[in-house]
Length: 87
Image (cartoon, rainbow, N blue to C red; front, side, top):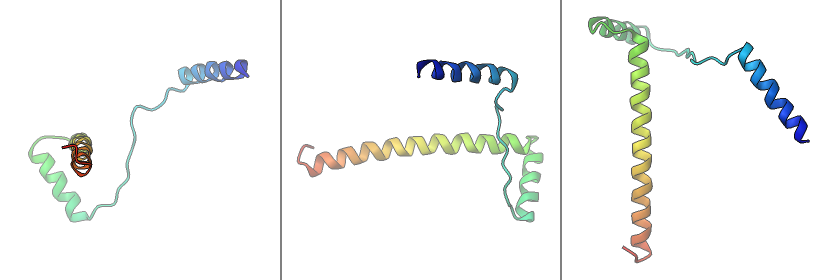
């Protein structure tokens, strides 16, 4: 059994050298034509590629999500302590 696991890891390493995993993902989304044109115009006016703006938005959104989730967890711990009479 150990040999099979080792073999699979070895095969994976060899295959990943030949066929490297993509470092990017593509999204296909539906957007109203007017919003699409307004977005492209806004990007063009700031001399920024639309893809760069979307990636920046995604990073900011994930950061905000993580912060909010952390804050919510802290708040729920405090609330639970207060309910238990510990705070």
